[in-house]
Image (tube, rainbow, N blue to C red; front, side, top):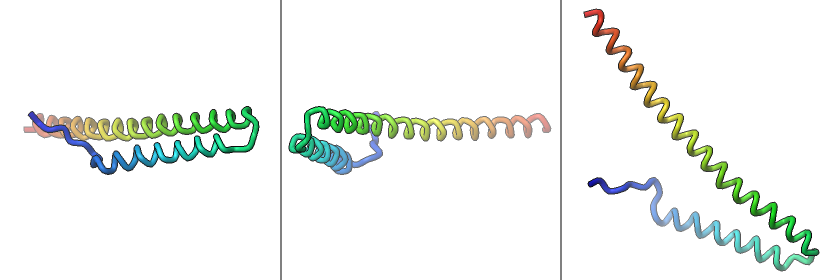
Length: 92
């Protein structure tokens, strides 16, 4: 059985999630200590949550599109190779 290979090291994954959690905490602390009405704090919180979730979605879409493009290119090269091989086989 093959061992599953990950693209990123565990240290990099920890750093990514750690920095994300750290900056979310800083944002929430900043909102909590903000000297504005609750309506303004809610507006900033709503905007921040929307920005965070759309960032995750955008990164997933970009990654998926890149993987699809790589898969398409591999299939195209494989089909192109089959066509060239068939062309050479018919002329023999």
